[in-house]
Image 1 (cartoon, helix red, strand yellow):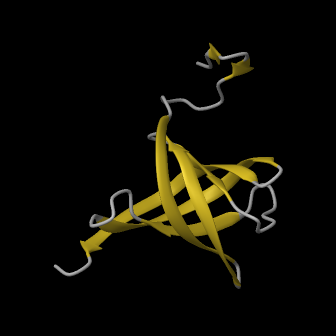
Image 2 (cartoon, helix red, strand yellow; image 1 turned 60 degrees about the vertical axis):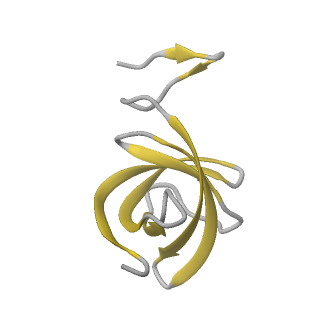
Length: 100
């Protein structure tokens, strides 16, 4: 079910939570940096200067906390507005926190 929030149609199945994290990404042979701005159970939103095509499969590496574990997520680009992207999780794996 989609909800109408803040003057726009909510596209995500689950509620968004604001985040702020640096993301290292890879699309094919291209590496890029991004900044995450929101996340839900089913996907995340991020900003990047890298041009990513709709429906592209991308691998993202990020931490939600500075000392937290690295998360590797395979995502599909579902939405693009300028340098803002919405992506759906295909797979997520949590690694060990650094220094542990």
